[in-house]
Length: 182
Image (cartoon, rainbow, N blue to C red; front, side, top):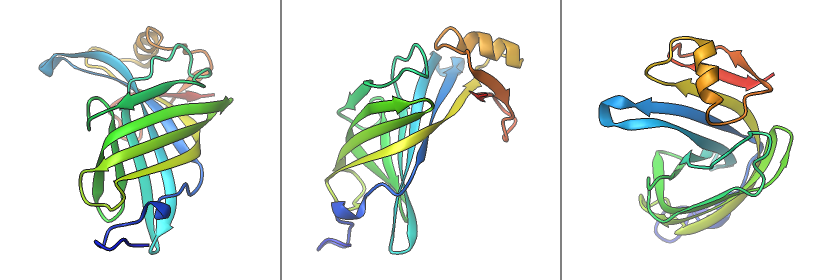
């Protein structure tokens, strides 16, 4: 599935199963970054040449009042990391300059997301490709400098999104508070 330059063809980048979407409430007062809630979509793609392929869509600035009501949300980003970072992981990390991501529909904690990426920055192959996949909500991680308890983390999260239906779950890294549907 390689093109004439040794990169992948767009037809090789297809959804390979259910992925995950999650939130991150994060701040960094050292660099002046105030608390902000952003979203991530991790879309597994079909294996290529026997190796796993994953599409990561990070730092999505969706304004979400309730995680159970996100159908129709969309973000379009014209330049890498302004603010969305879109990349494909296959034999390395391959960034895409432009991205459009839309939540097509929602069924409970599952959303169907459509994404179009263009502007291959790292030579993966296709200059543009689109993918659509179902993603399961895994919850929100709260990593704020002034928060020292799960109760305080949940209260701060409630300033950004509805928290009913979320329960505390362990953070395997031990550096944040995590809340998932319960």
